[in-house]
Image (spheres, rainbow, N blue to C red):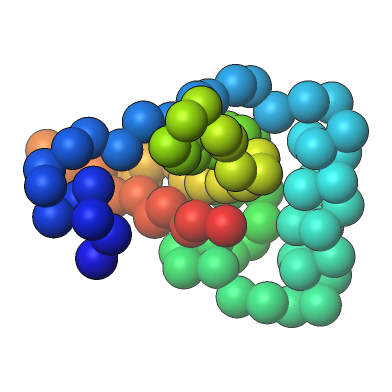
Amino acid sequence: MGADAMRGAPASSEQRAASAAELASFTAYFQQQLAAGVPLPGATPPQLLQDPVLTASRASGKRGRTGPWQLSAHIDTRPRHTAPGLCHMYRSHY
């Protein structure tokens, strides 16, 4: 645990939307995973997936220094009715 976390100081970070190049790169990676048959929870067939949500963020350190941008994504399956009044969906994180 870092010294700032032990002192209770909030970690500051910066976020932005993913660029077109980052989105294209993730889409290519994800399509490659589907083609390779990597299973996704609750996601058979693949058309049950919604569009990925990508976020780029980086942490701010001491003296205004920032770390590298890190891209994260999540993909949800479409909600499905599993019982009266109950829907179920899966979320995969990358």
